Amino acid sequence: MSTLRYILVSAICMVLFLGYGSVANVVQAFSPLVNEVAVADGAKVTAQFEITTRETPATTYSEMAQFIQGQHIIWPALEERMAGMHPGEVKTFPLSAEEGVGPYDETKVQTIPPSDLPLDAREGDTVEVGTGKTARIIRILPEKAVLDCNHPLAGKPLIVTLQIVTIESR
Image (cartoon, rainbow, N blue to C red; front, top):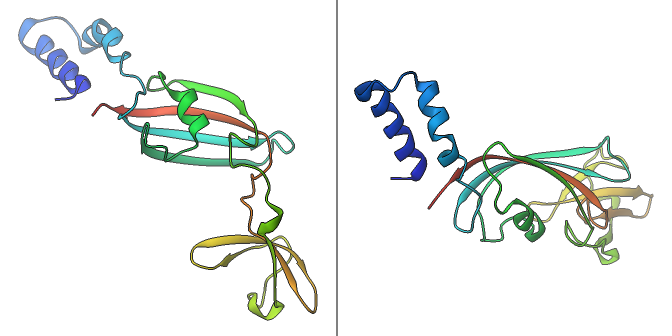
């Protein structure tokens, strides 16, 4: 049984059988133990991320993610900074371009025939290229269309706000 479940079952038993008072009193008594559940390798973590660029802080990318800490499913810099955090805790910190998506790669800019684009495509639109990959249309000319297959955050310093939603020990 996980530590949190054990604490909750113990709290309920204390209220029901021992007359410990209200559930609030029990939760307060156990809160130091509950707060000791922290992000550590092997824990199943649910976190909310909000990512902005330093150049355009009004543009925010928001995502809820669930992962096993230490399996490097998310950026290593995020794993490092969330280690030791507790449920409900929030951190805001900068990331360099290298710590985030990585550098901008000029080789990921490609040209295709305009006929390969959707009929209503416009410059700035995001289109699917290949299997599940996306690209932003940079330019549409009569003889070619220029696509940027870099991640929109590539090469940009970032500001990340993350909140730990839940942690399940394994």
